[in-house]
Length: 347
Image 1 (spheres, rainbow, N blue to C red):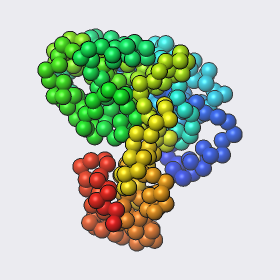
Image 2 (cartoon, rainbow, N blue to C red; image 1 turned 120 degrees about the horizontal axis):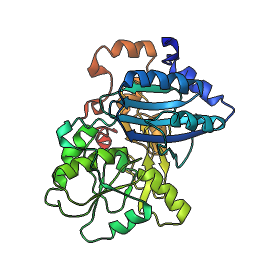
Image 3 (cartoon, rainbow, N blue to C red; image 1 turned 90 degrees about the vertical axis):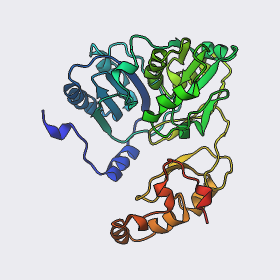
């Protein structure tokens, strides 16, 4: 197979310019399935060739345990894309969740072969995908939240919950998926018989998480079917009261989609209400943080005064200074958290 059609090596600026020039609308969607895939590398190349021809953009992970995809499809090619997915026995009938709010989410197609489709990095002995938590629709999830001793657990990284969450949920203080399961297990110690309600963005993180908890002695584990995305659709379609407040964080160019009008986040620089995550405008930093409009203007989209000053230097001077990490960005660059305590750095 010609490798030239298996990877998109165009410059990011060119790709974004081409995306902006498109004359048609796109549909953002996601889907996943835990299913045995004998040859992930072959599947990866086959899917890339086929979906690239359909002008599909997005991020797709394939492994021996299944597929995890977040993609953007031209509206006029939607039926062809669904037909393509269903043409593979492993993916036939896979639930495809359309985004709550469409937008320019991706600008190229990336398909990677991974060891896991969610990087929990736990051993095979720690879970059994044949035994997962029961799936609840939006109304069932709301009703279950009202039960005595019920405990909702946000199975996302902490910075995702900063802009949106279920009112009653506990939030694990973790940055990465590999930290999540041990942290949740520790938080739930002593609650093995209580109703445990898991939720995440689209459902995939809850699948293995629920199996992990069941394997570790938790007796009453449920999960929100289709995650926050499906919940938002059902709330709108069926007139159900949303117990999720704020914005659903998404890992694409949109950075989030509003579920309710509530703004529960705070600017990491001035502490005023805000719910927009951005990457630091210093290309040598790119730390993820929440910034209000005023601070965005003050700091030129950067996380600190130091990063603003560095980003304003001529690019050739930046390249020279990058050889010495201590001269590149502010100390926020070396924080162990994705969100630094930026208020300490603002002056």
